[in-house]
Image: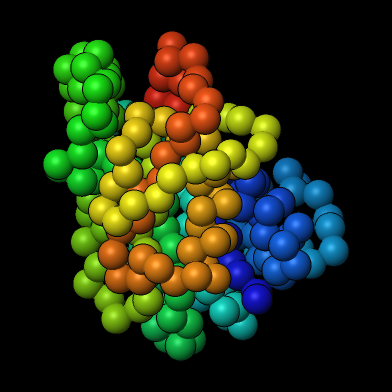
Length: 230
């Protein structure tokens, strides 16, 4: 399968690209910084701003599916990265007749999501980090979900919990709408997206994905994902 990966030079996008190539897919890596992606068999680099409709249309032409792993850092200012890019790539997919779309969102997009037994997270970290520091980011994720959900595409909204780095894929858990857990390793997120691409268990709904086998350092996670992230 020939797939377009948006955000291909980001931490999740790199996992997606590596795992997709290893699985035998052809990958069109859509990025604004092509020099950061080494040449490999099966990989095509498309230089495009994900919010530029014309550039996005050219990038997705000839692909069978689109996977978005775009990300943004926390900001007090209004964020439009997610919704603007979703508007661009859903329009391009419709024009080219590409039906399958998987886009990374967040468990925060589910207003009922409360991980079982995670009292410190639910009553301290979540209100402070996600609902306050990450408010504008998650507002735009919800706008992205609305844009995608309003299309006739075969979409899946992929909702991880707190993202962190782990070198290998673990025995992750998926569930409809959101999954019961606080953290998601990027390796597991990428693996779950590629599996869903094949199995199509969560078409036109949201898929939560969480990691239960390992846990990250919480302070490091907040710094890397909310403050340091570029």
